[in-house]
Length: 105
Image: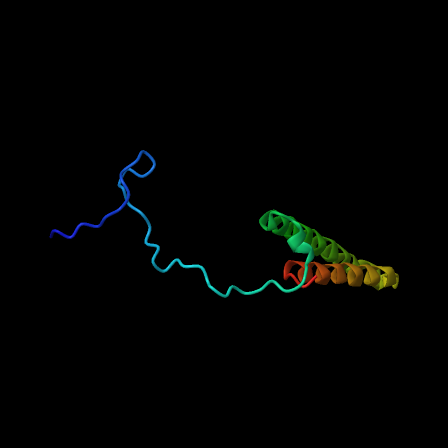
């Protein structure tokens, strides 16, 4: 056999003295440029922001669902015009939120 793979010395954190293969792990010399500013880039931790935005989106879905459920009963009585406005309003907020999540705002 005689082929010895060399690696770092064993340590308590790395008792096997192994290391990951990094030959292909080279940074892109021409990374894609971030064009324009977005609301999402103003937060240091984008993962935390994404988590909060996901929760906000779920809450908007819940509100729209609540209005749509009420439509079934109130529309029969003919008094759901403001409810329709509410549905459109919250759906428009959701579209804006999706733009923020996509980095377009």
